[in-house]
Image 1: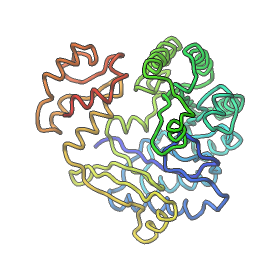
Image 2: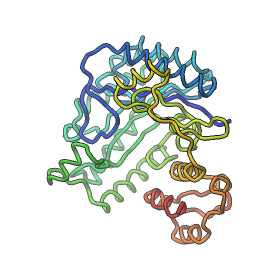
Image 3: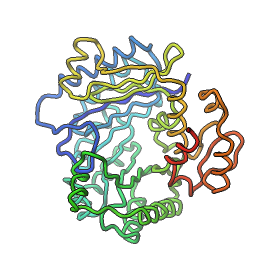
Image 4: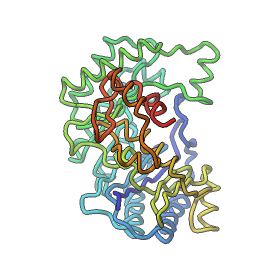
Length: 377
């Protein structure tokens, strides 16, 4: 039996960031009670369908779940513990905006033991350009507030921003790694379709760095993190040690099982010999109605084909330093990996020679999606 986790999607934000393509909605001050009740019932519905399993991680994502008060978070943790079983050392993560740092102490008291702080930048001009409503000082205060709870602290930053130089990013990242954090998630800015940033690019109002600059910024990211004792264990994620790695995200990368509750959440669950993909209703009102009518908030649930499972396993697993077991891929595919593709990728120094696993080299990590495609077709 694989590890198991619970993802709770809280879709509301105080403001919508122009680069964001997640399922989010502007918070309007309405009561949270109906959605919390629906999420509680959805957890119970999942347990009734798939059985009561022990969760090693519970992740509150969004949206902005740090808008929730401590008593609201405690309700949802209690619901997860009732519907399933939370391991004694269950990692309970809250994605948090710096503006909500005054709530961190009560959120930790409610059961949060890992804060993932969405600083996104430590530069005021960059924060304004990203549409954020906090400044760099607020991010520093938020890290201090999270560290004061004596729980684990992770920091999110976005790089490859418009006009960002390699030297500027080196200095900003060096500053971030000196903070009391044990994990950082470092993402290159991606212009997602149908976002405000995509419309600005189309109008010529925004010019992200070109591919060569992006590659140079990525290389500097690896260099600075290695020197500071934050090696990459996944393409965009770095941890001080193995214990600081994001347990919940490892579920995704290892193709383990998790349920997703809340509007727009996704899940993957192994049940009766099949791997079932689940997607919840996206609009909060539709989600609440679905739970009320059917006991679960799903818009769809379908068994994946063996090829789909193999493709997901490869695409996600190849991102990590541990790579993917070749035997597992070949069993799922029902055929060997393409020997000529493996040989060519090894010759190009994009994957490491290994008879047991597919692992990317440092050079290969920048081309992970293309390499996965090369191996899967």
